[in-house]
Length: 266
Ligand SMILES: NC(=O)c1ccc[n+]([C@@H]2O[C@H](COP(=O)([O-])OP(=O)(O)OC[C@H]3O[C@@H](n4cnc5c(N)ncnc54)[C@H](O)[C@@H]3O)[C@@H](O)[C@H]2O)c1
Image (cartoon, rainbow, N blue to C red; front, top):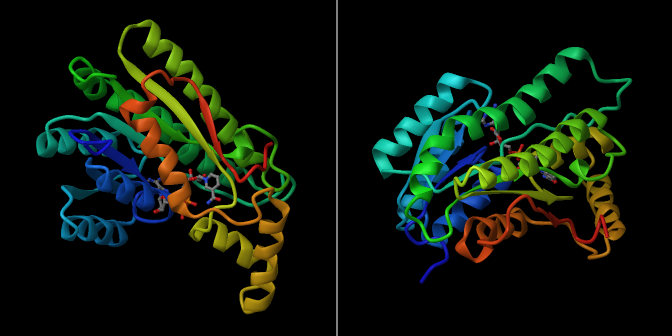
């Protein structure tokens, strides 16, 4: 039996990067998947590809900073799939700026996505997750995408680090709250580093200059060489950790912080 057979999952930021890889990996493990993102065109493509591969998947427009978008996304999930077992709070923003360079409007924006988005998603999905948890063997689960910057201070982006530290602690606090209340909802966080996605590519291009592929490549090689594992991560490396935490194999894990960082924090 596949590891997520009979499970229904909603993944935010699933139009690209780690979110899209997570949606694909979850579908491969038998889950019915809701692709949620602000990027409609790319999100529809991910959902269509999954359907063509035989998965039960659809796209829903969701700006995670908007309460009414969340309400509509959960209602659509319930009416199309009949429930929700797993929420993956994956969508997030990175500034790549020092405290001195960042401006207040950027702080409000990163807070809205990285913090408010996770709080709203957790709160609004909660009744649906509780309902499915009543009858599933190991309950429901929430997986929050933090970062190694949510465990140790980021050397380049203190604002991002602050939001991801918030995600780490919110994960632990809600794991305790839901556990003690008997909701049977596990909450865990994942902490990646150095994953090749649009997010990191944007930052790398800003750092070394857009028109210098050789400089970009040597910058990436330097990052890889700085990690004990000696390579960059793929989105699939991170997706594998999410699949595990969403599965019943992780039935005794709640409030944990799972690093997928090639040894960066070791
Ligand atoms: N890439 C890395 O190295 C890395 C490392 C640590 C943590 N992370 C975290 O992993 C998560 C995914 O990162 P990624 O690298 O795949 O990023 P990405 O920029 O490649 O993809 C992010 C996705 O989120 C969507 N999104 C942005 N704002 C949104 C909003 N308000 N509502 C809904 N969707 C929104 C985007 O449209 C995009 O599809 C983020 O939380 C990020 O902080 C990434």
